[in-house]
Image 1 (spheres, rainbow, N blue to C red):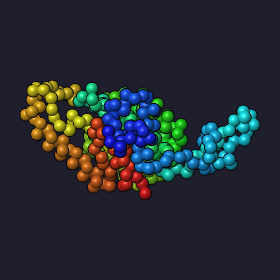
Image 2 (cartoon, rainbow, N blue to C red):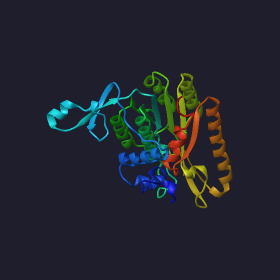
Image 3 (tube, one colour):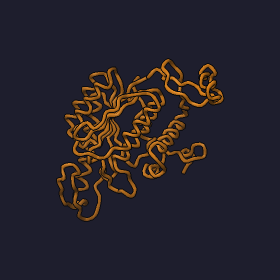
Image 4 (tube, one colour):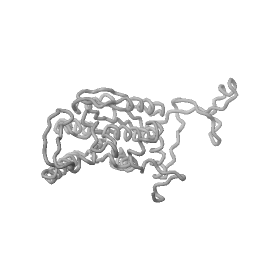
Length: 308
C-alpha cells in the first residue's frame, strides 16, 4: 500500500476494498472510519458549530470557549459540559434508496458485497459527510412501494437514526421508483439535493419523468447507478442459467457466445442513462461495488453535484 492510502499511521478505510472494510465492525464504526479518512484526504477538519438552536451537551475539551460552558451542570455535578447548538443548515438533502430484490445480488459473494450492502454503507458515509457540514439529510426507501420515510435533520443523533433504518433493511420485491421520488416533494419544501441510489433495473421512462420533475422544482439531482462488476461483463462456465431476481424469468445460455452482445447492451444502457440525465441537468455516476467508498464520495460531492 502506498503512502497516499495511509492516514495517521493507519490504512484509510475510504480507500480500502469495500468487502474488507465491511468486516471491520458495525455500520457506525465502519462509516465513521470511512468518513474520517475521506475528510482527511480532503485536508478538511470536521467541527461542530455553535448557533441559535440548542442541540445537546458534550464534555468540555481544552480550547472550547468558556461562554458555552453550562454552569448549571457544573454546579450540580461538578463536571464541565459545553452546550452545542444547531447551526444554520446549508442544505436539505434527501436520499432515495432502491431496496428491491435485484439489489441483493452479487456475482461473487466471496469477494464482492451485494449491491444492497454496498449501498447501505455508501449512503451511511454520504449522510455523515452531509450532516457534519450541517446539511440536513433524510432517507426514503422503496421497492414496489415506499417502505420508509425519514425526514431531513442536521443533528449527529439523527445520523444514528438513519443508521438504524439502513441496518434493518432487507431486499424487497419489485421496483417502483416514481412514487418514492415524488415523496421527496413533501420532504424538501425548498430547493435541496436529491440523491437517487439504485441499480436502475426499473422502468426508465417513469423514473426519468420523476427525476425531471424534481429538477423542474429546482432541486439538484444526483443518480448513483449501482452495478456489480459481474453485471458489467458477462462471464461464467461454459453453460449457465441466468434468472431475473424480480420476475424470476430464466434463460440458459453459453456466456462466451453472448459476451460481446451483452457488453454492447450494457454500454448502450449506461450511455442512455448518462445522456438522458445530462440532457436534463441531472448528475449521473456509475458505481461498481468493488469501488472504494472514498472514490465515490469524491465524485458524489464534487461540483456540480452540490448546490451552489
